[in-house]
Length: 109
Image 1: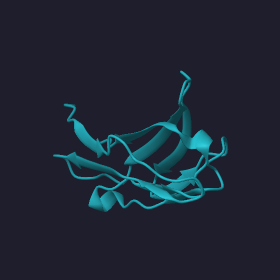
Image 2: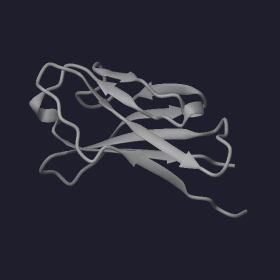
Image 3: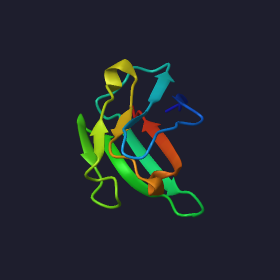
């Protein structure tokens, strides 16, 4: 079957202060309808490292906060895939949260 791209949009840079909260927005667009099997995964790569870890996953209509890393107690799902939104919120920002966050969206047929 043919494959169609999903266009994912995030802010290039997001700033927050230690102790505050920040919303990491992730919106997406697809020419195909949004299936029940849509999945959204957020990864984090700490500044100065090459390794990326998965910190959040949305699948089968449920959000799952990965049980590793310092984000597991500080993360909140703020998205709505039907509205093409895969955003998350991180509470209690820490200096070690500085790095690259990546939103990956898959919409299988």
